[in-house]
Structure formats: structure tokens, C-alpha cells
Amino acid sequence: MYPELFRIGDFPITTYGIWLAVGMLCALVVAARLAKNDGLSRDRIYDIGLWTLVGGLIGSKLLMFLVEPNVQVFTLDFLRSGGVVYGGIIGGFLTVALITRYYKMPFWKVADAFAPGVALGQAFGRQGCFAAGCCWGKPTDLFFGIHFTEAGHATTGVPIYGPHGDSLFLYPTQLIESFTMLAVFGFLYWLHGRKKFDGQVLITYAIIYSIFRFLIEFIRDDPRGDLFGLTTMTGLSTSQLASLVVGLASIIFLFWRLKRRDAAFASEAAAAEKN
Image (cartoon, rainbow, N blue to C red; front, side):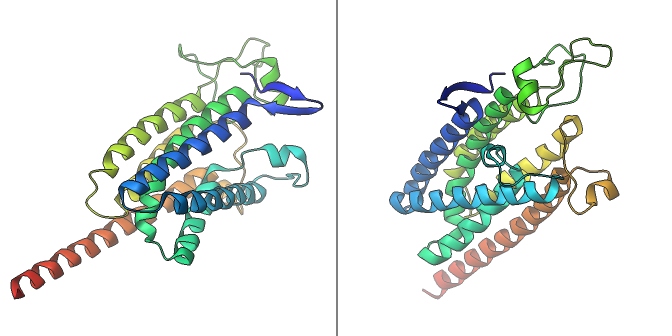
């Protein structure tokens, strides 16, 4: 609810930007630590992480450009905005796939190291959304409804008054996602040390997030955009459509990785019998 912390001259230092920066830094630290546990180079993970951040930012901005009408690309607001989360996830995923191939590193093992950090970064990032007043929820009469400030309304357009001029309380979708992703981070961090095959952590994250994001979209009320008219056609938001694609792809990857694991076990068993 405090979009702007202070200014350096005419340049505003936003709460969202600070939360996002802290989230990215924590995500990199977590990824490097988990990668070291898997015998990967921490320095190389930091390199990959920085490229992944760039790829994620490009992906988030690109999807924002595609789904939001009349978006002004060459503006300070466009540069400062976080973009669309799913675009960032897909952009980061593709970046990891390309960079690990370039460095000749195991993709699935690297991706498993990054997945918990991504969830942690989202937890921090949604706190920034809450402070800015973006990504708001639908009106609610429940006790945990949030009334945003005039500053939030001026910054993002978050509604603060009802049709009769009364104070409007909204679902705190930002906090719901933030605390949920913090719990997901804890679970993925725990899972990393107990995984049965490389890729399990990333695939688990993708399945959990796609389900959660599909459901929370029903109480989101900020402008959602329309990707190639699909939102109008289906009645689902862009993020819900992305959730369906990501969830389905994750299940396919899960069965594929399980099949590869079982094949590896069978090969090892056959080799042991020969010896």
C-alpha cells in the first residue's frame, strides 16, 4: 500500500522494485546453494541465473505486449512494470534450456536447483504487487478484505470506492499468492534433498503453480488482457489458458522423466546381473 518509498531527484524508488530485487537476489542465492548440493558449480549457476533473469524479464514484457491493448512500450512505466508472470516463467525456462546447452550442463539438474528460488522470488514479488496496489482481487465482504490507499489508486488504478461512494474492500490476491508461494518454496526446498529423479522439483513446481494460478484467477479483477482473442472465446483469462498448457506439459514431462528413470534402473539391474 506504499507504492513509492522515496525519490532520487525526479526518479522514484518504488516498493515494488525493491521487493522484486530482493526476491531475485534470494532466488539466486538459493539456486546456488542447491546446485552445490548437486555437485554443480556455484559460479556457473550465478552466470546462468543472471541470464535467466534477463530472459525472464524479456518474456514477461513480451507477453505483456501481446495481451494488453494499447501498451506503450517506450515509456518508463513499461520498463518499471513487472510484466506478465507466466511470460517470465516461460522466458526463464527457455533461457535455462539454451544456456545449459551452451555450458554443457545437465538441464534437469540445473532447473531443479532454480525451481525453489523461483517460488521464493514470486513470494517476494507479490509483496511488491501488494505495496503497489496492482494485481488486485474482486470485491469481497469477508473479514480479510483489503482497502487500498489513494496512492495505490493513483499509481495502478486499483479501485477504492464502490458504486455508491463507499469504501471498497478487495480480495488480497497478492498476499494469498505470496504466502502460498512461500509455502511452495519450503516444500520444494525439502523435496530437492529427497527427489527420486532429476527434473522432479521443477515439474512439481510447475504442476502446483499451474493449479494454484488457474484457481486464483477466479478472484482476480485487474485487467487481464486477451491473447489473440482466446480470452473472449473461452471465457478464461490469459493466465488460466497458460496454466492449462503448462499443467498439461508438466504432466507429460513427468511421465517422460519417470519412464527414463525406470529405463535407467532396468539398465543398471541388467548390468549388475551380468557382473
